[in-house]
Length: 128
Length: 166
Image (tube, rainbow over all chains, first blue to last red; front, side, top):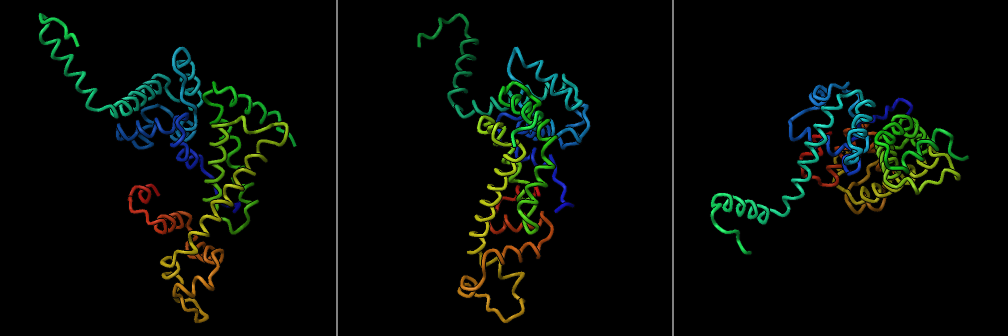
């Protein structure tokens, strides 16, 4: 049992199911961009060994704290704060879109209505 | 024994819920020693992978609800180790109950056991104790990854993703 080596990577995998932590966002970003851990570390300009620590960080708060939190996390894992911010924003946007897509057809209908209105600007606005 | 100064400082940071690196730093500091101490508590025959998973869940549950821990009652390490050990025991008991009814697992590696035991279901349920079966599985599959595969198979998991992740 003394030879057994625990790994923060295993803890980071368990953390995927915890919405307050970065783990799920990072995993989603990797999947959408087709990045393995090495690719992700290269993108973030951080040592690959820091990725489990990054996954265990709390998601940055929204503005006005977002920048401060991102810089704090980036400093902790030795990553580029700009690239980290980009990753988080991209993953959060995809996540929000995924939640919205549950509305499905009604969202598409709204877009179509707007296009029809834009195409015929002389027409009076739809009373409904 | 109450929380140490360092444990108390981490606890306050987690309670505030505004510190993005607090939990990661705590895990980095405490995780390995927590797994080892819980493994020691669980005994030499305990599956260290199961123990580690229990420790991970205990840490993550603490992150989600740090107010459940009282730093005046015990150290954070003791508290987390106790929670992890309890979760490990529950997981192990659940595993034993499940294995007790898994005739298919017992059939293959143990069919040539000495002693002339007839491994039909009735004999298995009458004579084989779940704990002995679990020990036999641990002996047959010393590699923790292989044991996890056996668990997935016994759960009849058909989705290839969990296997691929192992």
